Image 1: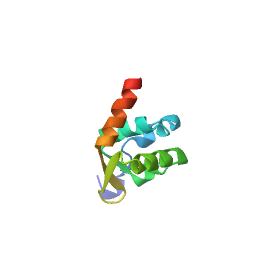
Image 2: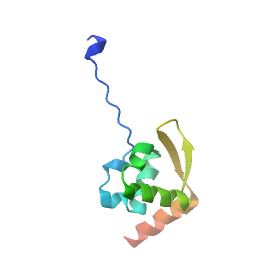
Image 3: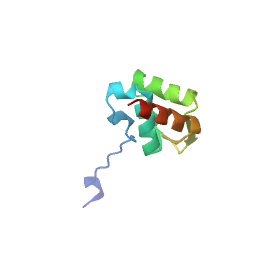
Length: 93
């Protein structure tokens, strides 16, 4: 196949944009997804005000530690506070 016949599709998502809008506004749901995926892109973390506010909250509460993985990716590791928050919210369910 000649090189001109190839199509490449990039998807800059680790799964946050697969969540419904209501789920994107729920810190426990987003934190659980981050715990599984261990990264997010700047595109999905700022796709709308709901997810942007949730991400600001999670980072501001120090529930995750962030590290640069190269544009557009950010790696995340749950802190002890983040793990405790998940445990507490799962007990309520």
